[in-house]
Image 1 (cartoon, helix red, strand yellow):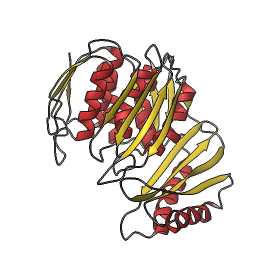
Image 2 (spheres, helix red, strand yellow):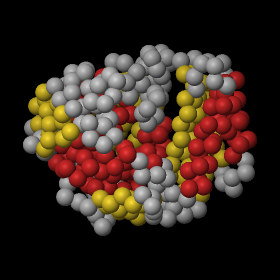
Image 3 (spheres, rainbow, N blue to C red):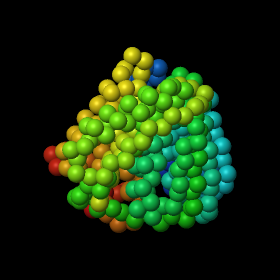
Image 4 (cartoon, rainbow, N blue to C red):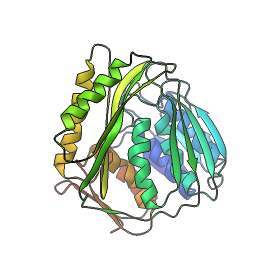
Length: 339
């Protein structure tokens, strides 16, 4: 049994999700205490409970403490991850991408194909968006040897949620390490400006402003307006930048009283800061790559815009499960794994 302090480091829900992923892949039982002790409200939130239930279902795990508000959870896998068809619902606007993130690697490494569908929030504050998972994380996993497809079925915004995402995973992946110390030349910037249950001029204005601000970049631009309908109402812009050997993404959600042009300006400012940093990954991708690269064959190295507390905490959780060296060099903004 591996024991983890859920209040360590950054102290967020990522500790739970990373522990679940590694527990499923390695068959290692884990108990996590003091979950989100410094957050308000503390303890498990609905998306964490759904992630625990999803992980338990794919590997026949015994679980204790999987209730909203619980600050201790015990998870004991009963079998390797089983491929199959699965559906899970967060039941609120809780993050569907974070539930997917929890089970994606175990199913990718399992012995056969799987199809999953998760209902909940797809574009909510404090979580990677569905577009980020599809356009930034998925291509890197593909380059490592995973075989998967991610689809946006319906948008889910706060507070109602009502979104859904589907994932097809081939299984049988053999992950290989990556060398992303140098990102190479920029190849394109692409993305969507979305307006859900809103007039068409809103996503159009967001897209137009972003294109105008990015005209000085010497790269192909493909930023399209998208008007759609769903249970909940929302807007935002979701951009991805692709390099020959690197990737990053930026998402900015609109809110009531926030001009469309401001949404675009915030996203473009962040994207240009990432581009000017020279890093091969943004700080969120750097965090999410620790687990798959720690499970991959061979050493890995990549640069990022910043070594964040979130990244450092995630690395600590991985070290509790795997005897692989993980080094974080804040000065060089460099992550090395297994070297």
